[in-house]
Amino acid sequence: MKRGAVVLSAVLLFGHGGLLQAAPAEPPSKPASPPAQELRAQVLSLLEQADAFPPYGTRWQPLGPAALGVLEELASNPKAPAPQRVRAVTSMAAVDHPQAADYLRTLLEDTHTQPPLRASAATALSLRAGSDAIPTLLPFLQDRDEHVRVAVARALGRLGGAQVQQALEERIPDEADPLVREALQQGLTFIEP
Image (cartoon, rainbow, N blue to C red; front, side):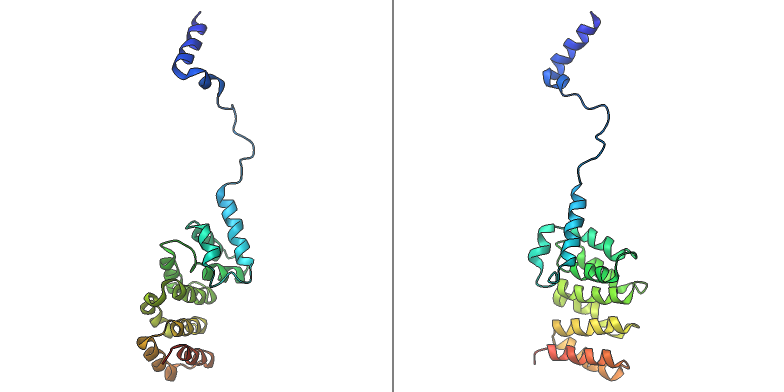
């Protein structure tokens, strides 16, 4: 009699559906693929495409802000192929995340980061922030690494303006590396008179 009262009470409280839809005793053995795995696969696919760089907004924007986390993970993974890491950093310019520019700035400023990644961060920051990146990039014309100086000179040249023109012109006589001098001159050619 007590058991019958408990069942009746349960039916009255929860309705018939509550008794019929009991939770399984154990969780499913293999959960469905989480969206994060799908996002990672999409990011990797885009990084493998030859034309994944600018103008690439139409391809990266649909992935949303979460793509930045995947790109950060790939960029910081020392076991990932170097070209994939560099492309991950450059692609951060197109990801729709409000902190992408801050991450790129931090990566550029970290002297412990490999120079090709820092150079890629300079390029991506200029693409992402436009002329707002100029104050951040200018000091890196004197960076200790020539890869970074080359990337910064070209990025600044593409951004243009009187301040950039003056900085590039002033840096040429002080630059000892011929490749960097060439990049400085190339940056000047990007600037419209």
